[in-house]
Image (cartoon, rainbow, N blue to C red):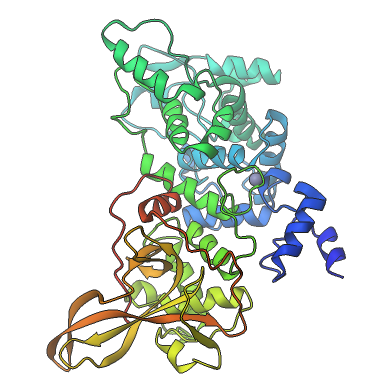
Length: 507
Ligand SMILES: [Zn+2]
């Protein structure tokens, strides 16, 4: 039965279908190779996931809502958009996840989340030019006297697709969905390259040498050919962005590409959506969850989907609502925007939702200390730490030593070299992220008002717990040393420092 299921549904996400025997899945992958993979390397985009992508990055349920002047595209359907993207990927040789994802991230930035595909009128003379920017990755003509009035790339593209009407009517590139997408793939895969930065640049020669050394593997490569390098090192996504924007001779690394924060965020969100960090068969740095606590794969995928974005912003606000709803916390239809209205603790809602997705024992409760109430029925206290174990933190009054019935519920991911527990959880610094917790003594403290009196509350480690009936594997018991900043950086797509705040929740 199960074999048939997998063969018939080669593109199904095995984890959401709750197939639990990880070693079985691993064997299947070996037997059927990439056919049983779920990542974009081995398949086309599907309309539903394109809709989800647009929703996640723009908050919108539809395409091309830009003002008419900057978005005159005629076919605004998701079906055509998806099919044209797939055709373009095939035609220009976008094969792996990272090829497609880096393109989609750049295009998402250039088009404001796939809402406009033509340079807006602005104070720049170039914005009224005949051959101004058009398409997903805007192609322009040649600049002359501050305007793009020489056909330039439009001429090259017209030749490439054998349609000279593009030169007399450049709006074809923005009105016609096929040309909007095809021209951008053509630009990405055939036209735009990283310079080789050869020769000498008199006063800027030191900068030239530094660039040659730092981006050595990318020299002479097209934007598309940078893909595999981006899998190895995210600095090549920075370079790809810089090449699209224009990389001045005078600069080395001191100036970020235009819209850098937005590009990074879109890149992280799209990577999360397509599970490139957990599923991609061509990603040498993907995380391996084989024979490990199965809910941790769910937790890390949610962390990638949240892309280090804070709880009130898109798409995390909707995710938090999803966790709370599962735990029956926001059932009141009168408060649909509750999470936007009022901050609330969501660590336990996240943890219980995650356990539920992996078919593990859990409780439906937004209260972290519910773990204690359900000890013996849904959770079991263990002395030995293991990967994915629930770490329960409890808040105590400093004056009386009594628990105030609140704290934090999170999952053990590893340890810091100083011995702190490294935990992956929700509502840590208002995010899903990695944070340190002390296993002995006071982990953190704060002053709160209880019945009008200010008291000091100390948060301390209470214990490790597992879902009842889960037995840790040998691999689970090997606790790895983790660098928190590196892990959080991989969630956000950029290099972060000082991300070790816990900001524990208090429910
Ligand atoms: Zn892949």
